[in-house]
Length: 135
Image (cartoon, rainbow, N blue to C red; front, side):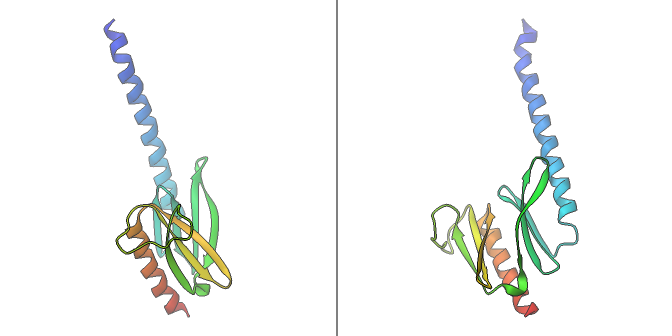
């Protein structure tokens, strides 16, 4: 009888251990993926990096980072901070939470998702600074 009471706790422990192992694996893969990058981030919406003048971002699927898209920093003309799900609404300076950076240049508009608006603002200023330096 006492064994049956502890069985759910054992299952929860095994589940938490497995989830922790998966997160550790994701973090190790991210470290190798972002190695030698000038700027990199990993959050709930995916991973992004700036390496050799190329901004690329990926999502973590099936145990690997799958590259979604890339953008050459020398082509960058403008960056906008946009709401993640409300269409074309730009975010105000006070807004928090999930958002996306819209990279505009050479006739292309590409969105990079972020889980945190403050980190997106930091990326925005750093990318514009680097784009100006590379011009």
